[in-house]
Length: 306
Image (tube, rainbow, N blue to C red; front, side, top):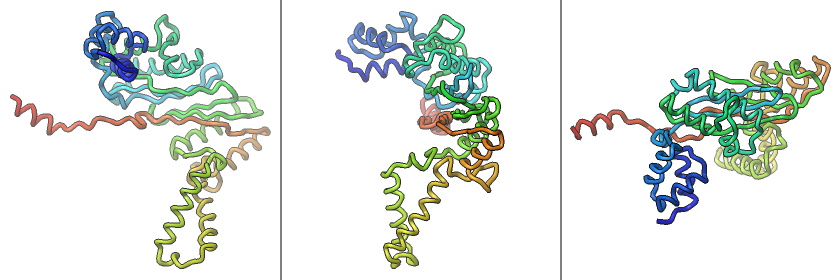
């Protein structure tokens, strides 16, 4: 039976084993997925295969600055309880340290890198954690800033991890407070863009179209001249920027100023420059479809089957 690249990917997701070994397993078993899993388990590569199919949408988002390198990672588990487990938290911190040290190009490179302080790869260490903790665990994503000054912030014990990257003429320790304030803003409001310049023409055109349609549907505005409506749209776009662009947003710790103005004021007070360059915000389980458990239906089916 033939197999496809998609089958190799599926087997990798089921077992956590590398692509080449998954390909070998499918070749050896004529593309039979169940036999391929069994083949990998017999070879000692997929001891955790049964757990790897479970949905892991909890866990931890973690950000840190390690030896001057800013890192943010997300590692998932099945339950919120495991996300607070000391061994799991240590594993997440070890993944972050590996990212900082090894500078992997992508997730596959990270999983094949040596896990910090061990002779195991990150993938092997992850499989060990699955066996120890008894849940499916997956390193999901990471980001890394090696240039400039990075400031990290972890919200609610790992629900959100934020990494802010700044360019500054000041010593790193002097800009930590400003960086953390910006990181907290990003955690709280999750802006779509950092600056006005990042808003594409397509996004602006869509917003203008919606605003014009809203006025056309408003009895008080429908008969206004087009020129008047366009002026109103321009005013509303300023509001759009203020709501969606980080540096234009009202600063949550002082609503009399914007985030951009706050950074400028902080830099002036310290006698230097602070320029926001980039940031990454990871929210635990973001975009992962969680399985909805229907316990009543499950119990009913058990009763019927007994």
